[in-house]
Picture 1 (cartoon, rainbow, N blue to C red):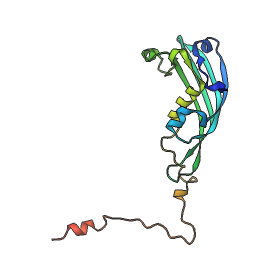
Picture 2: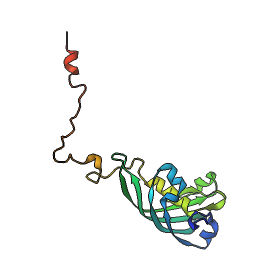
Picture 3: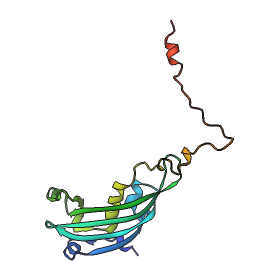
Picture 4: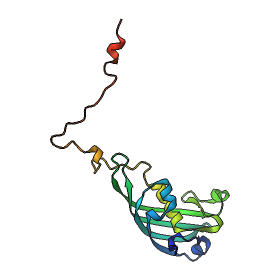
Length: 169
């Protein structure tokens, strides 16, 4: 059985009824997010409120939770907090983007249908870091100081003597 957040919804019907949907979505089940941020885990929850603005169906999306990503410096898991609010105008075709007010982001809803999963995937694709890294001073193992008894890594300077070699006559 497919989860309710993955089913396409009729945006006009939702906007006309000023519907509000509550969701909880495991991130590993969003194929669009997995293709952009492979191995992402965690869960988000929130609400999607639909309404009309200037004749266009609008979704107000509020998403909270945490994504589990892999730090690209130390290759260890890291938690990335998510707290996002966005308002998008749901348009049926790209030609309608010119009608979208400046305070809204246009989002394509082909045939007037979109799923909560598509809304979340779009928002998180823009909000998650392209190169996940632990915060400065955070838990990154690659930045950790050497343990007692271990020698600190020596910095190699391959061109340090180049100036002297070039001065030869």
